[in-house]
Amino acid sequence: MQVITHRFGTVEHVEVDDADVYHFEPGLGGFERLHRYALVRDEDSPVEWLQSLEEPDVVFALIEPFLFHPEYGFELADRECVELGLERPQDAMVRCVLTLSSSVEEITANLLAPIVLNQATGRGRQVVLQDANLPLRFPVFEAVQMPLAA
Image 1 (cartoon, rainbow, N blue to C red):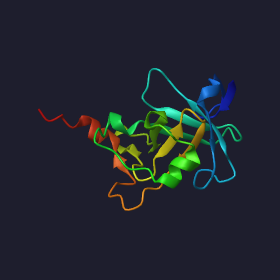
Image 2 (image 1 turned 135 degrees about the vertical axis):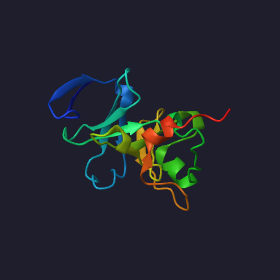
Image 3 (image 1 turned 60 degrees about the vertical axis):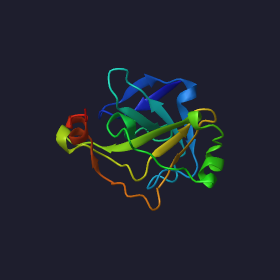
């Protein structure tokens, strides 16, 4: 499927597999009227793009949280699993929204409201974690630079 995106400020046409199209019900916070998104991947980067199929100007930078925060985890409420049609944990793909900056050191990830994508059903949802002691703005670069414990 051809997708139009403005992810880098200019009009770009990218090819996306139908399996990478997700329906969000409800829509993402602040974009409730938009429901169809494509996950645009770049094999040379860990950053993925959640591109609205209804509005080319609406695109979110995403990243897999386990790349920079290996112990990241949360329990998904039964209600959320039902709404996502999630029957098997391995069908869930978790991503966090990045806040980009011209300075790499200032890039942050929202660990408090991850995006959960069900690869089997094509449903997606942003989940606001309740009672979680996780930051809204987690410094990604700082986490990547920390040496691993021996």
